Length: 157
Length: 60
Image (cartoon, rainbow over all chains, first blue to last red; front, top):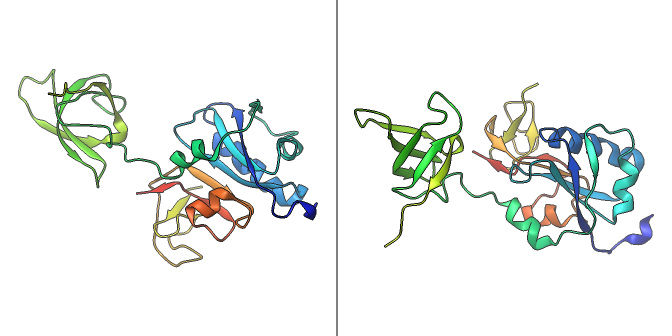
């Protein structure tokens, strides 16, 4: 199998049960050397829920490694381009898309479901400071960028 | 079992200090990359990974 030296690798998406992406990736990784399959890397990114990306010589190499692994839902037909993968390799900050004045909704924590307006964005700490709409007294609250989603962007101009 | 990521090389480990670069590790990390063949992997080359193993995509 060493005759493939110098051949380019290809990227394939594997469907998994949501929440089991890393377990599936670890299981496949532990089988690579045991089975001697030509899988070069396995990528799990929070942006692709229910999928993992496998870099391999071809899809048959992936198929060889899958029998008996739970939570695998099948290989997606076709290859992925390297350009599609690159954006996942350097994840952007959780607050990169948040601007002053945006309306956000809390997705976790004690304020879950509440809406607020952004008054400060800290890119390095990935935190935002907001003022809750429901609060009678406008007290600024600083929270992690991972705990919110943007509901409405501040209108430009 | 708690898994930490090295603040320097992003390698995943259960220890408080990275086994390969001796830097501190942190439990605040996201994303997961398992590199099986650093020489043939485009992902490893783009991320500058030279040793096979499990890595985080982003370490805080």
